Length: 192
Length: 197
Image (cartoon, rainbow over all chains, first blue to last red):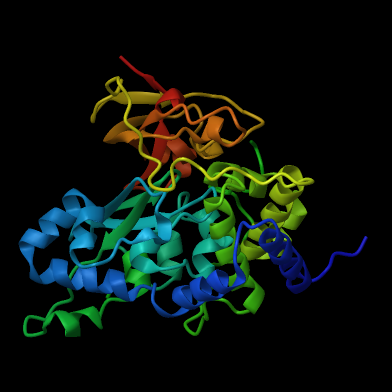
C-alpha cells in the first residue's frame, strides 16, 4: 500500500473539515501567519527582562505565571486549555530544564511553537535520565554542586525557565536585556 | 498505554541536534495541519486528550517516521474517520478555555507528603509516564483540579481530579547509576498517587 504525500493528505483533510463546517480556510491562513509572525519566544524574552529589572514583577511571575504575563499583554488564547504557567528560577545552586516526555507540551503563550530539537525522541528520552550529560553535550557544563531540576510537563501545567541575569549588564534597559534572552535559555539548555 | 510515545528514559535515539537556522514550518502543510488541528478541536471534533490518544494509537513505526506534524495529521485522519461519518457534525464543546475545574472536595495530598505512584498499565490514555510507575516521590506543588485525561480521552467524561507536581530523586527512577544531584518533577493526577505514612 502506498501512502499519499502529507501535502495531498492535508489538502484532503482540510477539504473535509471545511465541508463539514468545522474550519474555514481563511481562518487557517490567518492562524498560520500568526504563528509565524506574532507568537514567538520574543514574548518570553520580554517577560524575563521585566523580571530582571522589576523585583515586584519577578515575585508575581514566580508566584503565578499566567496573571503576570497578562500584565504585559501576553497570555492570549494560543493555548487556552492550559491550567497554569509555572516559572522556575535558575540560581547559583539550582538549574532548571523543561521537557515533555509523553508528547511535546510547551509554554506556547510565552515561547511560541516548540523547536524541532525539543520534539525529538533524543531530547524527550534523555532529558529525564541523564540531564547533566545532555546539557554538557549541548555546551552547558554544570558543576556537580549545582542541583538539576527537570520538569516533565505531563499535564496542562506549562513551564518556563527564568534564567540568571548575565554579569555586567547593569546599565542595560529592558529592551536591550530582551535582546540577550535566547529561546533555549528559557527551556534550560543554555544560558543567556 | 505502553506505547512508543512514552519515551522518557529510552536509549538509542542518539544526540540532540539543535539547528540555529530553523524555520517554524519547513513545509507549508505542517503549518496548515497545526492550525487545522486547533480549529477542529475547538469545533468539537475531539478534546485535547482524545487528540493525544489518537497520536499514541499510531503504529510505532509510523509514529517515529512521520515526525511531529505528521503525527498530528495522522491523528486528524483517525478522528475524522471515527467521528465524522455520514452527515454527523460534532457539537461544540461547553468549555473552550482552561482544563481547570471547580470541585467540591479538598485535595487529598499536601506539599511535603511522601507518595508512591500506582503500578497500572492501562490500554487507554494516561499521563503517568512509564518510567515513574511504582516510584516514591514527594509532593512539591498542589494545582487546581483539572479534567482527568484518562477518562476524558475515551468519552468517559471529564471527572476532574486534583493535579500535583511530584518530585522524584534521580536514583529512585534510574537506580544506582543515576546522575547525582538531579530531581525529576512530574505533574500527576490524584488517582495515580498513594500517600505513604
